[in-house]
Image (cartoon, rainbow, N blue to C red; front, side, top):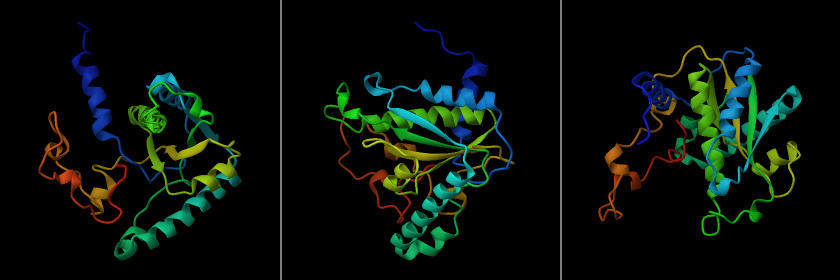
Length: 231
């Protein structure tokens, strides 16, 4: 049987998992290029269905382009607020990104030509997106281990951002990743601190063999806007 990590190594892995946060507050300081290279390499070593490696990672170094991307996110933030109805004012009080303060702004995208990859996608074509999410999580955990914060921004129109980045037909942006130094990591997910949503009990989200007949807490209605938030 394969040998597990030793106690200290194993504890470090779990620490990164439990202390990772979706960061929105950054200290405006540069990221060491060697560290950035390690984080991008960690993302590139993520698992992918059929080994298709559908992620494409862009680094935004042009200040004008960063400002344009920020404007695109701000427009979608306002539209999202309007769609939230009675929670609009509550949402508008939340800080949802740190694009202008973070040391590095990265784009994680799906490559074009994905229809050629059938292995693992014939019945579940969305597995390409799942693979990109694995790459993002690899980078997120590695960033935490490096003492850097990372935040996933998904408030944008994919067509608009794709056009700004000159993406070919079929490619699609998935995330704008804010990466950089932080004064501290949030002691708990920020959306919990702000009262936006709470973590569901583990037992409500796990089942054996067959879907439970009784509705679980994971199926209960969330406050508007609460679902899909990364913590």
